[in-house]
Image (cartoon, rainbow, N blue to C red; front, side):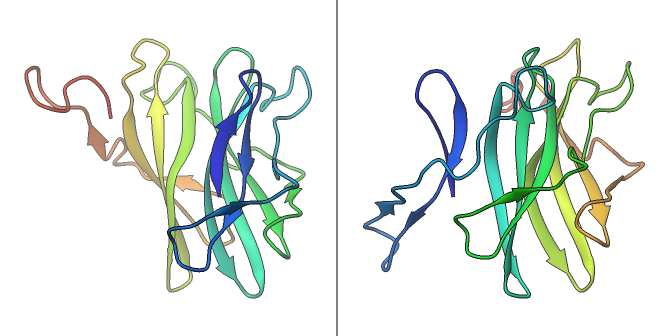
Length: 166
């Protein structure tokens, strides 16, 4: 699963490989596209993170509206090609202003340990687009709780290799 653009819309596609080196793009790409004008995901869907669980593909993806405000959506597929977006998206939203993640909360990684899903997400504020990383947890894939310790990783001090952005 990958993000691509035609220069106008940013969407999600799928490619397959038998050896991890030679890839074939799915002829039906894109498999997930931005929403309608004015929606929370009207400008882009990107950064897919997919788990295969109980015979289904689960995808969390970043999305942005026309103002650039980012959130995280969820979709499910029986085969990895035909996706159904969760009707109550987004599943992870920005915090109220002022906050370190009041302008964006986009998935950066997903894993599951025992019965708990863990999401690392990129947050950015309306005053500092350099961002930081936060942690959220869920027991059901769609209802997420941000940890009180957020942000869990921030940019480095001035002069450090990571002093510009996370």
